[in-house]
Length: 115
Image (cartoon, rainbow, N blue to C red):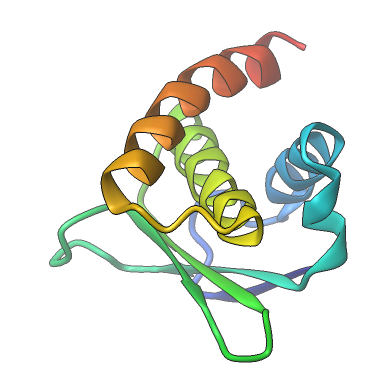
């Protein structure tokens, strides 16, 4: 299940977010089994443009900077959804998680944009 919250500047209609979520659910069906909330927020003073949190109930909260371009937004949301998949699979090593997420974000972003 996909939920949204925050101060939406990119994708104000939330259609793009829903489309990316559905695209990723086709690639990784286990994403369908959890609650994922996408929260757009100003991350200007943070060390990144997106990050993923998991709460004790197995729900995921993805924070994404609300000032991204179309391609940056697609890439960042895909990257963070890969982290959800990794958590569900039990991958905990930070370096492996980031390496894998950066690898797949490029391929999946290209596939999403050209489809």
